[in-house]
Amino acid sequence: MGFLLMSRPHSPTITRFAPSPTGYLHLGHAYAALRAWEEAQAGRCLLRIEDIDRNRCRPQFTTALLEDIAWLGQGLESWYQPLFIRYQSRHMDAYQQALDRLKAMGVLYPCFCTRKRIRAEIKAAASAPHGPDGPLYPGLCKRLTLKESRARIAAGESHAWRLDHAKAITRVGCLFWQERGEPAQQAQPTLYGDVVLARKDIPASYHLCCVVDDHFQKISLVTRGHDLKPATHLHRLLQGLLGFDPPSYHHHRLITDDEGRRLTKRDQAVSLRFLRACGVTPATIRSRVKAWGSKD
Ligand code: GLU
Image (cartoon, rainbow, N blue to C red; front, side, top):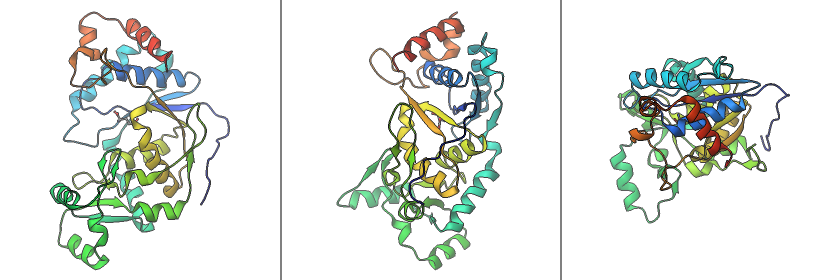
């Protein structure tokens, strides 16, 4: 309970690069991968394929990203040599166990709502608080009695599992994390409200899998884009509940195009495949990325 900012005994950094195979890697990914590799020069950089979403992830993108990473790392064997790969889709049992532990603590509740029902409820409400991923869940299924929820589950109604964030916060108290170059950050998990931790279609979620994997892969430094910094408020809460030591974090800048827009997987012109086909070398990409890094 209470203030918990663990410092680890000095040991080599273990970081990770965790792409989702929903498209081809682009220059922004090259930047993230190289930042992670750089951090791990005296340690390890692990590769994690975040592929739990079978509708959006494609095996051909996994194959492509492995090729792209190997190509990008040419001449830098010492950086990617210690890399081994964790495919999230092969670890559903680990996520289920974490979910069961949270259920046993009484900090989850089943949610039977459709998106349509949630949208209608939010529209009808006088105010609709927003979080980093959009409007917060208005708590419809939180009002169900245990008997009602159990009956609906027993009848086979499909359901997600949501975090009762108020209960969870009461359980762990105030939590902090260490962000590179900044003072200790206090976690504010209320930002996400009662977020879904296990979806109706997949019995897990990005947030749950990320926290479980960072723990199992013994990640000591999470390097990832600044867009994911808000997620750390929630990740810290999940770590607190599950009794996991928090890693340190470095949320780096995001690479943008000349107009200042974030790069997307839809934009083929910045994909590593396309650049490679145009004759661009890994060395050119690395030096371009290094130049961005100096502004971080
Ligand atoms: N899979 C996420 C992405 O491709 C990264 C998640 C993370 O680093 O925590 O943006």
